[in-house]
Amino acid sequence: MALSDLSLEDLEKLDLTLHEPAGLDEFWARTLSAADAHPLDVHREPVVTHLTTLRHEDLSFAGYDGHRINAWLVLPAGAEGPLPAVVEFVGYGGGRGLPQDRLTWASAGYAHLVVDTRGQGAAWGSGGATADPVGYDVSTPGFMTRGILDKDTYYYRRVFTDAVRAVRAARSLPEVRADAVCVAGASQGGAIALAAASLSPDVRAVMADVPFLSWFRRALQITAVEPYTEVVRYLSVHRDHVERVLDTLDHFDVAHLVPRATAPALISLALMDRVCPPSTVWAAYRRYGGPAELSVHPFNDHEGGQTHQWRRQLEWLSALLTAPGASA
Image 1 (cartoon, rainbow, N blue to C red):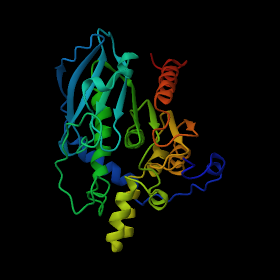
Image 2 (image 1 turned 180 degrees about the horizontal axis):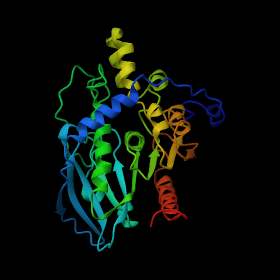
Image 3 (image 1 turned 60 degrees about the horizontal axis):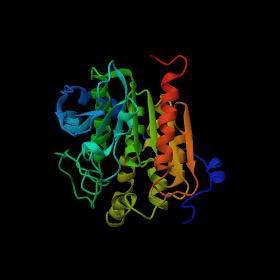
Image 4 (image 1 turned 45 degrees about the vertical axis):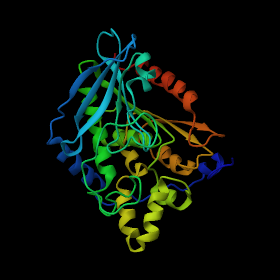
């Protein structure tokens, strides 16, 4: 396996002059204002897992257009007082899985909300539980081209709105410190976490591993593997839709959104990543509006740092939330 894109030295020299679409802020303000017309309507039901140190609940809330979004809420058993929280988003094609799948954050003393991605959950892992009730135009297999001819109908408009609503749902829980809700995820989950941090002022910190959905225009030209190639295949057939599609994607490009984020961020990059080329991740890191740290994994593909990175996240977030001046 070799470098999939540029070396770290060449990334440092990369021209990151990107041109965001006109009216981007107005588009997202309109989108989130429409979502606010629906109450969060959080529902919670206990789940029996036979895990004695953790407590699980099946939680749902109203996302985009009031659609129900499912999540697992994982809490330390017997914890007292509001806890800092981690809202986790899932990689492309996966779902929230089984309650026993993700135990680290709650074991470390956090409230942990594991959020389904609407319509996904049948490609890997233990499955998802959230449908996407919105119909689509013609699309290639997967999710990247659903509704892609118009920013108002594009799939990720619903997904990013769901993410903002997930943060608000977490902040509404009595077990959660409203001033300490953090977001996390890898690949697609990392992109959703970055979007949530960019579109919500209520995020305390963001941890995004090898994030997807960044610098679309470059990724489509240099990436030869899924999922970006879903869009390439679409455009190879719909040759007359190129500019229309690129304009849509620009509204959901996290490299365009992250200058608006202010929460501290920890972002990871793998130099041999064939799925999310390092230059696209680099763009999200360098254009990020708040303080950002980068973890570089020189000899890894899209698996990134995995447990090594998760260990760093635990150390990084603990230090951030207990630093002098951090809210108690």
